[in-house]
Length: 266
Ligand code: ARG
Image (cartoon, rainbow, N blue to C red; front, side, top):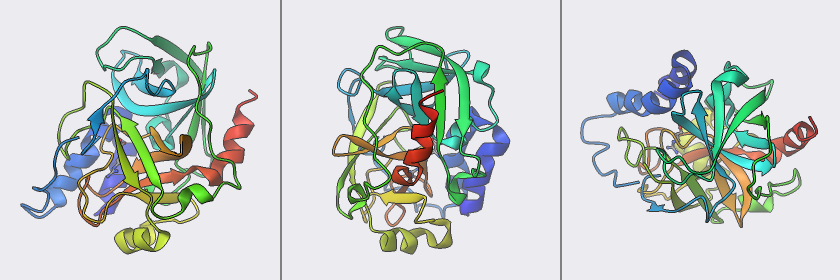
């Protein structure tokens, strides 16, 4: 069943991808099995881009948000490869400083370049990382990101913070306001127990509670997993949202840190 969740996004294109993957999973879930899913990011609280100035909306040219991203330099935004693979720079915008989806504040940035990890095929195979280059600098403080050697952030039980405008329940609607939640980093063993061979430990890290209830969800992809205020992961995939035994899966950014750094010069 993970096959559908991960393959559909690329066939449907990003906006449809982010919002339909949950529905696809829901259809495959036994009736009643998803009924315990509570509110927001799932299980989160509202926050602002003033509190998290590096959190960016990734939108289409008409301003419709379909993913999140993290400003890591004045003109560089880290997001998920599955959000932007196959897109042309002219069809993507980055919006900073805008807490509400339908606000008009903040800054709309045109994208002049899209780098997608050349090994990326689909989120459940790994390498789900991309860097957007902006035509002009964003006037917001970037987030620090993990170095290649920085593996301590993935210690099981570390507190991760996730952020986004994604759906507040599996199969639900997008959140008008930016939301955030904390989720514990899970051990590789725990993640492999949940996802079997779909979990690629070199490229991914899981976060979430064994009992579920709090998670990222469709539309949050590309946004940050912060550990100790440092960007450590990118929202990538999951089986449904916030279900027990089905943690969120994040790109293990330390693995791709040097590749990201190599993009900062251009
Ligand atoms: N693939 C989704 C997106 O494009 C993110 C899903 C995260 N799912 C989860 N259970 N944490 O927005």
